[in-house]
Amino acid sequence: MALIDDYLVSEEQHSTGMEMVTAGIRLEPGVQRIYRFPNGMGLSLVSNLTRGMLGLTLPDFMDYQWEIAVLENVSEDGKRSKLCYSSSLDDVQKFQDDEGANEFIKKAIKLFVVDKQESMKNNIGEDMARWVDTNLDVKN
Image 1: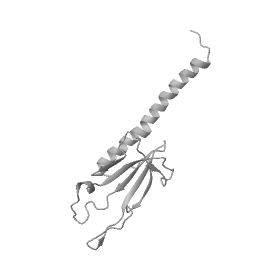
Image 2: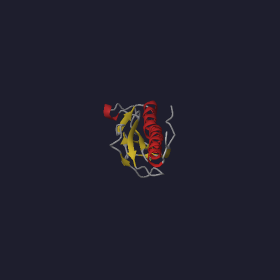
Image 3: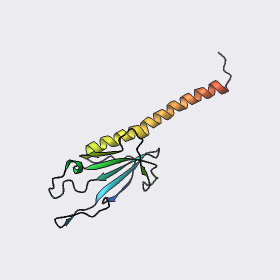
């Protein structure tokens, strides 16, 4: 299964800041994918470099395919952002496969895009009604 590409703004090699050499074999860098939503929120997905490599058995805290962090103030190109701790989504999650990561991406799209659009539509309706009540002399 492939990851969702909607709202993807950047995909680059990612080595988590360290070169890993095990038994004389250099592990290739993983991937970092940055998603940016219209409201400036986003996600960072980083693939786990060691999972499934060389037949290693990893401790539970390292046995995952994707680590996903919620971001805020994501630049248009995805190069600048900061971790978000105030979202209703957990700030950092780990997933065993693409399917789990895609479910999290879908939740983020619903929260940061679909729900925001619905909220804006509802607020425009309430604001318009308030403006009409305040500014127009409508007699029954």
